[in-house]
Length: 207
Length: 218
Image 1 (cartoon, chains in turn cyan, blue):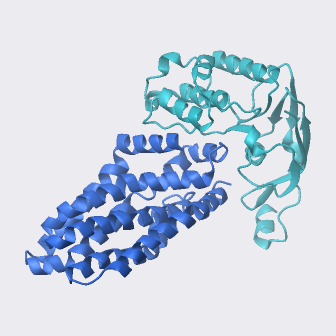
Image 2: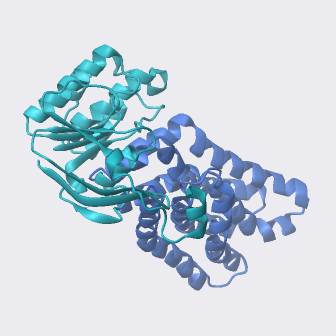
Image 3: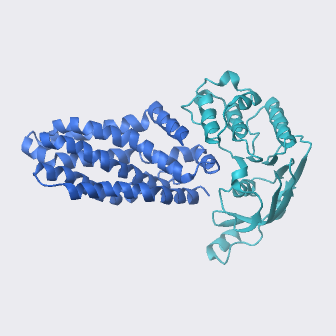
């Protein structure tokens, strides 16, 4: 699915962080977002996922086509791994979780309660949700945090499979995933320059 | 939707938090009243419907901040907002789960505890019915308060202040529909109004609360 974004501005709280963001992403390709901490990667991804409204500009995809994964995995500690995954599978109307479990090697963890998982295992469970969601555009915010090298490679392969199957992905990450069909976008150049809108306190704080 | 209901019930029963806590709190409040007021059964009978209603109200308030806060903190609320589930439906299911784990057990326990307060025989049935019909409003109105305060750390105080005034009509008409029966009068008006508050909250709260959540997760 093709994703195009034109002249998008977004704010975090009362402060405009990005302005004039424009890019276009072809079907089956991945866009890697780069930028230092606090440059607005997460804010942009939340706007793309439809969680926050854009202050101006247009985007071509509707939130119903997007599977979003943020910093938090939304895992319930009191449920087992399979209960967590099955819940999301039934929310998204996917009949089984086998593909998701095998992709992230979760088969031998299925009956473990989620509170006993390590950070990396939790992240794998969180990412497995992308496969049960079965949506054409992935919007991922630092998906490789707390994954080991082997699982980063596994994740990169998965993104490539997703691309090969006609899916697109927009990923904010600091590491090199080594993807074949990927473009990189440095978002620091979209940093909003204008400070505030005549609000004296804001202008003072930013000067 | 059904999956969400099942999951939330499982969570409520497994963590033991919401379910056991409200019921235990209700039990404690009602059991302490005879010690405070004295064993005079005429006095106790007079205040019994009010005490049971106030107890139920406070007990349901106790677990309200968990309705959305836990899902907000672990990111589930973000993911649900991007899932095919309509947020209005999520709110309705969450409020229903809250009622199934607080209002329903409280309604069932109230007649039993009524015996401790020398509730007259003819009032037992109405005590149960008035709570059964009235407490859903407590869960739904409470869910609205919880949705407004979801992003706030330690939002419990603000939540109570927001929700308590909304609870007052339910309390008045709920308790009245039992007291009137005890006085040998017709309680149709009080009971109908109590039911109307519940129905009104079903109709309005899911939409209002879903909108509040959308604003809060920005």
